[in-house]
Image 1 (cartoon, rainbow, N blue to C red):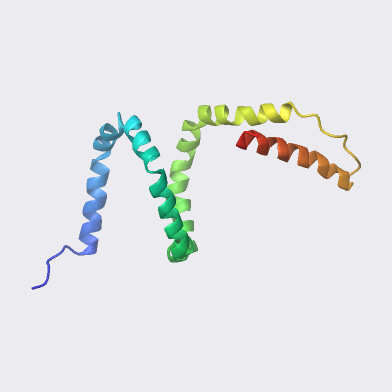
Image 2 (cartoon, rainbow, N blue to C red):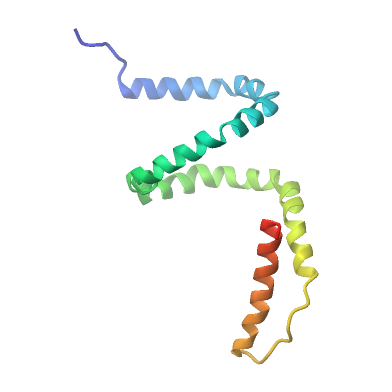
Length: 141
């Protein structure tokens, strides 16, 4: 005997309706979950690495990109992404400032070699100085 299942359209409609109605449940569920998330996620480091290696071996990233396709990316980015982008940027203002400040301080503390005439290859030393300083800042070197 065949297993009776709801059709995909009805299931998708139910998923969307119930998901939209569950916003408060979601908020309550994550309200005090930060420490639990952090400890369990940190404990899963080896599992994460194994999963990434497995995905690399299966070429899962490229397959996923191919399956999604450029049209899906463009449609979702121009609709959902465009709607959420302004709020996300506004909510990130303070964190952006905190995370950016050390790099701006690093740049401000540099003494660059003198600028040479436009097109002079030694001007690349200026670029290299900035690049090396920012990389050292990022990796703690």
